[in-house]
Image (cartoon, rainbow, N blue to C red; front, side):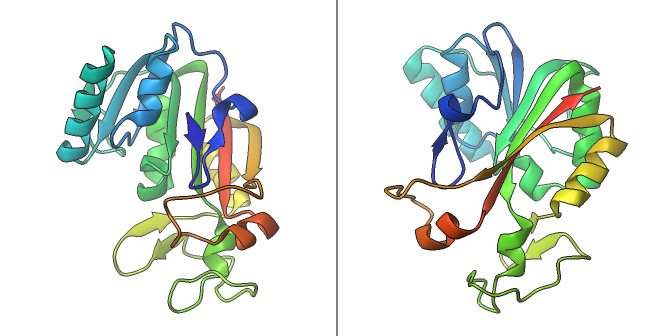
Amino acid sequence: MAWGVWRIPEDELGALGPLHGARVLEYGCGGGQFGLGLAARGAEVVGIDLSGAQLGHALRLASDRGLRFPVAVADGERLPFGDAAFDVVFCDHGAMSFCDPDHSLPEVARVLRPGGRLVFCVSSRLRFVCCDEAWEPGPALVRDWFGDPRLDDGQSVDFAPSPGEWITRATRSGLAVVALHELRPPTDATSSYPWFVGLDWARRWPAEELWVFERR
């Protein structure tokens, strides 16, 4: 139950809101570690992912911990759920990073109940525009702020709109901003993703954003 590559605890941020008894969708759950933490606190959590292998890990973890964690192989832009099915949709560098926000945001809004919450952690636009040709972020602006929101390093594609673009797209889908947390790791933070950005860089500038939206 922690956000981003530097693992900022949810208990410090309170981004998800009340969870006991809530119906929650982990939107690109991978191995389900975060969602299982929520299930242990009394949430009813469902996970989706495009990777059947990752979902297999999630099911094994759920079994080991004696928790119920139904999963489905599903496309984040075409969710296999009815309207207003969830109280919370969340992901930590999950489907909101890899799906086109012009499709993912309306689809998430559709499955959220009125007053429901969308919470997601993604790469910041600032990290993207500071990346050099080798995709290493440095202290200078290298790429355009405006234009194509896709970060394509030749191996995968992430979507990294600017904060203004996130707000515009979300508002268009009936979602209102509750909070934007610009994640700053503590001085003693460690990460298993050293290629993402160095600690010194992340201490000076926000490499990750944690967004909280509410369904109007």
